[in-house]
Length: 166
Image (cartoon, rainbow, N blue to C red; front, side, top):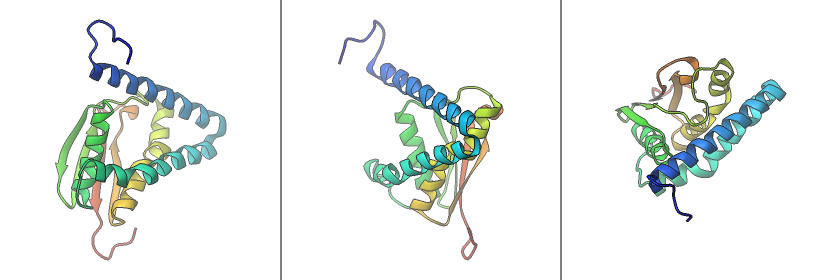
């Protein structure tokens, strides 16, 4: 590893790398959406869903997170995103319901209508697919978005009542 700038720790360098890569990804998503519209949104969403297929269950195992309930789901996202340098908060975690917040966003910093559209329609497909993989009775929804002007992004995951349809 090259020598770090004076005053930089490896943790600071890792977080800066995550922020830079996130911004590049956000810029790419925005350009795809602007050029291809709804078709572009489908592609972006599929990329995120495919990422969940490749990494989510393996990540649960790697982090030692047991279970297939709302609390386990939320612990994965708080752990994984904290490691990537996000400021995360686990607000509530029960087997039936969990709430977690992203206080920072490397991909789409600040309010922006186009980026809010990307978040709602494509970007959170990883989280949706992760629900399907972990437990088909889990449902996730975005209740707050920084890109829409909220102070943080907030995800709620809940177990559907027995016998309810998806």
